[in-house]
Length: 190
Length: 148
Image (cartoon, rainbow over all chains, first blue to last red; front, side):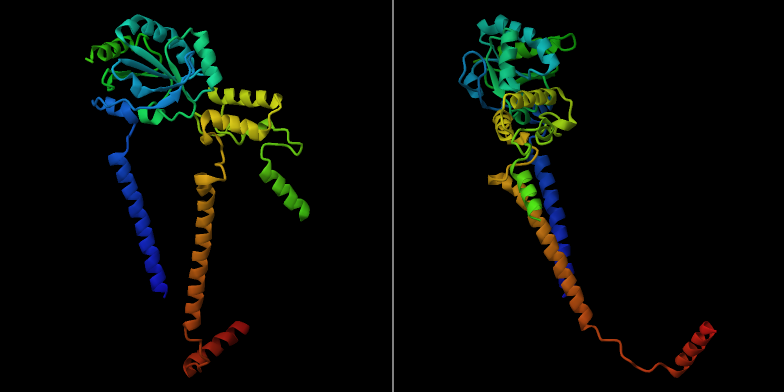
C-alpha cells in the first residue's frame, strides 16, 4: 500500500515538472516575447497590433487602429504623469502639422492614466491629432511597450518600420532615427 | 464570541471603511495597486501612485464611499487595480484554488498518516520471548554495576 502511495506521489511530481517544462517551452516557442517591438528589433516588420479604444480628443467616439490602414502612422504611447511625455508633446504636434498633408497621422495612446488627466494634457499642449485612452494598458504587451514615452512608426500597409524610440522624440540622441521612421512610414506605397 | 463574529463580518463586508462608513485613505491605499510598480499604493511613490492617492483623497473629500471609489478606479484601470481580486466570476478562482490546494494537502497528509499507522498495526508485536541466558546474565551484571 505504502509503495503505491509513494509511486503515485512520484508520478504526480514528475507530471508537475513535465507540465511546467511544457509551459516554458510553449512560452519560448509561441510566446510573443517583447511584443511587436521585439519582432521589429529582431529585423522583422510585423503587422502593428490592432485595438479599438475610446478617443479622448475633441472628436470623441471610438477609434480602431485598423481603420488607419492606408495611411502612415506615428504611434506615441504616453501618460500625463510622465515628464518626458510633456517635453516631447510639441515635437509630435509639429510632426502632425508638417506631414498631415502627406497623409501622415500621429496617434497618441494615453495609457495607465486618468482620462481626465489625459484630456487636460491635450488641452494644455494644444494637441490636435487623435488620442485614445488605454487606462488598463491592454495594448502595451502586444506592442511591447516597456515604458513611457515610446514611439512606433507604421507604414501604409500596417507594418511597423524603422525602430522604436524609447524616451522623448526628436531629441539629440534620436533625431535621426525619428526622421528615418517618418521617412520610412511615408515612403511606403498605397 | 458573538462580538468577534460581528467584528470579523464588519471587516469583511466593509473593507476600507470605518464603522461609520467613511472611507479611510490609508486602508484604500493598502487595497489599490500602483499601475506601474504593481505594489499597493501605500508602498509606492511612483508618479502614478502619487496621482492615484491624490484622486482617492479628493473622492473621500467629495463624500464617495470606499466601494464607489474602487468602482471608479476599476472603471478607469480595470479590475487589476484591486489588490484583492473580486470574489465573483472567473476571479473567484484566485480565492478557491489556494483553499482547494490546502484542502487537498490536508487530505493527502491525512491519507498518508492513516496508511502509515495501518502499516504499524500490521507489523508483528514485540514478543515476550525469553532472552538468551548468556545475554540475560550480562544484562544483569551491567545493571548491578550501574546500580552500584
